[in-house]
Structures are given as C-alpha cells and as structure tokens.
Amino acid sequence: MPKPVHPDRRPAVITGASSGIGAATALALSAAGHPVALGARRVDKLEELAHQIREAGGEVSAHALDLTSDESVQTFAAKVGADLGEIEVVVSNAAQLGPGAIHEVDSDRFARELDVNLVGAHRLVRAFVPAMAERRRGDLVFVSSDVAVRARPFMSSYAAGKWGLEGMVNALQMELEGTGIRASIVRPGPTQSEAGSDWDEELAAFVITQWVRFGLARHPRVLRASAIADAITTIVTAPRGVHLNLIEVTPEASVEDPS
Image (tube, rainbow, N blue to C red):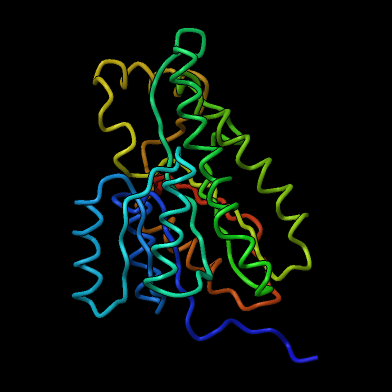
C-alpha cells in the first residue's frame, strides 16, 4: 500500500485571526503555501490582514466568525469552503481572557468565557471534522495554554476552559485514531498578544503579583506570537505518518552573566 501524502493544496482555517497568535499563524501558513481562511469578530482587522497576505502573493478568505453561535460557525464553514475548497487544516485559536477571583466572577460571564474557549472549539470540530473523516485526512490544531497544567489564580474561567480543552482533545485523538486526521495541542507559555490589554492597570498589576507569589512568573521574558505560529506550522507540515500530539512552547530566561 502506498504511503499517504498530503495533497498539494491544503486550505487552512485560523480562528481568532484578527491579532496575536492567530494573525501570526495566518501569515506563517500563507508563507508556507497554504490558502488561509481567517475568522474573527473584528472583520476590519481581518480585512487588513487579508490585504497584507494578498500583497505578499497569498490566497486568502476572510469572514466574520462568532464561536458562541452554531449558526455563525456553520455559515463561516460554508463560506470558506466555497471560497477555498475542501478545508484540510483547522487552527482553533480564539479565546477570551478576563481577570477575576472565581468566587467573585458572575456565573454568566464565567459561562460565556467557557462557551468561547471550550464549546467554541467543539463547534469547529462539528463543522469541519465530518468532511475530513470522509476524505481520511486533515489536521486540527488547538491552541491551549500553560494554565492547563499550571493553573494561574485570578483568571476567572480561563484555566478551567484550557484544562477542559486539553481533555477534549486528548479524547479526540483516541477517537480519530485510524481516520487519517491528526488532532494536536500547542501549549504556549506567556506570549505577547492583545489578551489582557483591556485590563485595568491596577488589577493587572495585582494579578501578575499573585502569579509571582505562587512561583508562576519565574522571569519577565515572554514569547512573540510568531514563535507559536512556527510551532503550529511545524505540526501542520509534518509528513503524514507523523503525529506531533503536543508541543509546549515557553520563553527562555535571559542568559545570566556567570560573574
């Protein structure tokens, strides 16, 4: 039996593509030759990124996407499929992150965040995996966080959502075994992004101080979003027969002067 190979054309969906890791991933996958489909709520930002990709010679589709809505996800899937053809890669990256002590956060807000960070990822699975299963190939990449294994305080539902996401993906990996579909996790450490940029400065300082208190901020270095995009590209471009189940990416501390 011949060894399975990737098709020459592999359109890739990226959610949360309007900034940060999502935008960096779209640029990296486009540079690697993938047509890319961008999804996010901020359509103006998507159009700016799409223009940049087209200027560089890439093929791109951009549409509004609300991961808390079944209808929005299904409509998005239909539109990007019509634009680019069969979707071969899905990068689930969109997330919500807000500060707050768990016992003080309103339960409705807690649930809304989980709806984006966990249930939204499942909506993508429902929208794209059945067709991948018929074709017997495809890549799913779920962007998690180091909070999935090292919970940080005062982040509301974020740790719960990422723990749940990794649980779902680990089960999914077993369920998809033998289908030709690879489900992978990228687990970033602290990364430059717009997440937290809208926090109150005093509250943000308090939260970071608490991370330090519990040994969760060992040094001030953070990753560029492009580092996570490179990890995602490595997963997606691995030859068939190779499954990179999990890649954890953390910032290296500054090199100390031995003197």
